[in-house]
Length: 249
Image (cartoon, rainbow, N blue to C red; front, side, top):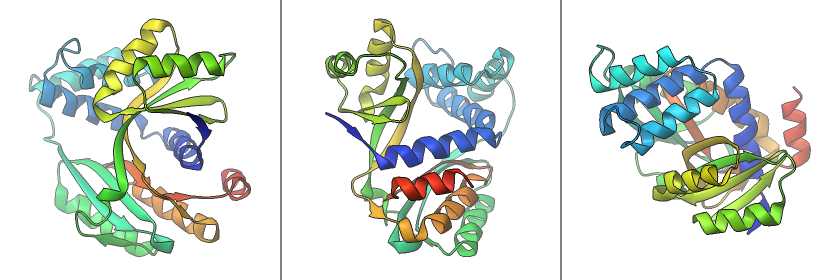
């Protein structure tokens, strides 16, 4: 059940870098707006909104920002009309790349994404080209601290999760896509301190990219720097040695 994941390592460290770039609040606000628009402004009856608000609070977002985002989603406050649009492409070594965006101008977004692929040696592809490579799952992160691994594995199984991975100082718990909120609630009610919970996409297979890792990370960095891009997924892994070198540059 428990294992080490280079996919998890890349995602975790890229997520930390993304937060440092100051885009985290913008992405969290957009997610709150979409969740409130699609499921209503009451977090008690809208699990997606409840999770979005929880993540925003974990990132120390002020309550006033959260309240405004909810009201923009429900239409109480005027604001941009965001659409959820996904894009697909290829990076070096044929690495599959799946991009989730929230945009109020899809012509601008696709132009910026196409330019980024072209600039960094990738290719924008047609819808459906790589989507099948990624499974939609839930992801919950819990800090290891002094937690007993056997104990948390049993708790995770009892809560209905699919798998648990270890990476550095965290446990990464993989859940069925539609069960994220239930597993999250059960673990939280049990007393576990949850660092993050989100819907994600996990590659069914990965490509070794040691020889082109720096080029791939430049491509992914460029895509993530686009304001409308929420999340970028890619099906590659690199060795610990290469990952350490990139992390220190």
